[in-house]
Length: 264
Image 1 (cartoon, rainbow, N blue to C red):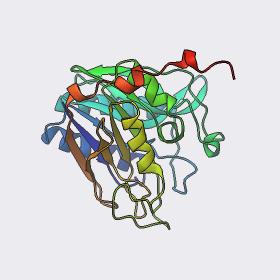
Image 2 (cartoon, one colour):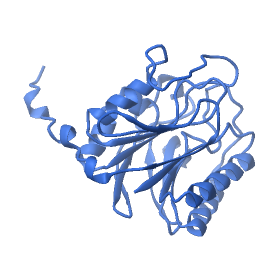
Image 3 (cartoon, rainbow, N blue to C red):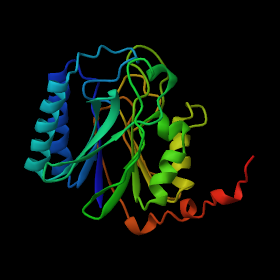
């Protein structure tokens, strides 16, 4: 199964975000991917991280769903779109999953918010698995995958081959300049993602928005914890990787025995 991770630059407007989504979907399909995943809240942008995020209404949401569904259908590719999701419960950080026919298969809401996100957003309350052409996958959004390994283990124990990890790290204003994936001198993010793959025996596909000072790379990690491929820091693009689904056994995740923990 060939997957793609799209890492565009921070969008200047909702229209710019949609134009970049359209472009990257087409590029991922051209490169042979069957599913493409975008960074956290790429549409219209993530609030509270120092970037200007335009207003985003229920009408905007409907327009995004219609547009992205049409592009997925036109190119015959599944899309995992990091976006805001407005529901009766409030404004959520979410990943909307479109199948290759352009239909909205479902939405994974971020259930574990970073403390800084508790003003503009509310958490979701459930998790789900998705399937596209035999590829079973879950979605753990940013903070969830970095600090709440249960979100990835849940998907692995439910039979996921891969967990997509849309996230947002770094800044265009200031920060570190990284050169090597997984470096001990770098922030812990990449090594956390390596652990999520290794401790569950599945793939993790981690994608971030492209900034001048990224604190993590867009990368695919295999079930043994190795980096299959990554994009250069600070360079937007589409990363394509072939997954050997036979390696994604979920062995270590399935061996988890919570009944042996006791009552504390």
